[in-house]
Image (cartoon, rainbow, N blue to C red; front, side, top):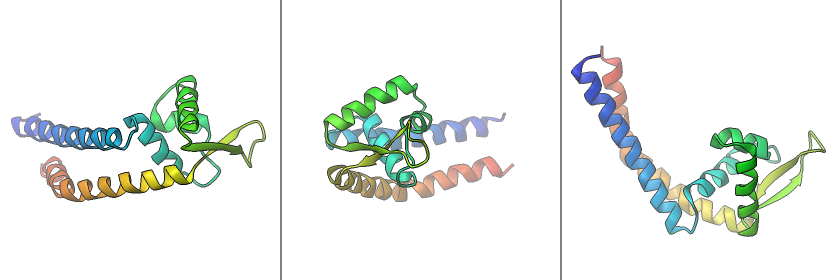
Amino acid sequence: MTETDYVALADFRATLRQFLAFSEREAKQAGLTPQQHQALLAIKGAEAGKMTIGLLAERLILQPHSTSGLVKRLEELNLIYRIDCAEDQRKMALGLTEQAEKLLSVLSSAHLDELRRVGPLLSELMARFHSE
């Protein structure tokens, strides 16, 4: 490791953290916790009718029992609903309500704008790792 490597790693980590801080602020302004926002995004990003609590737990790097609590809170907020899982009748899949779709659309647009802003910096930082 060179001094330049450490500088590049520190800059990269700082830029990622700034994006995460932006994301957390946006979620809170929308009335969600960052974890709730991430759960909605994971459900939206999955193939329709395929996201289960187990898969959501994997995507969020949470224990299934913690994910169950998160899902329950999102249901209470009328942001998600459960549907019969087509592949396994013992499981329930998760879907987004219209309210969640609208909320996620606004949040995702803001996130894409921010990624467009920091993307060139991240690309520059990544190039530093490949220059040696």
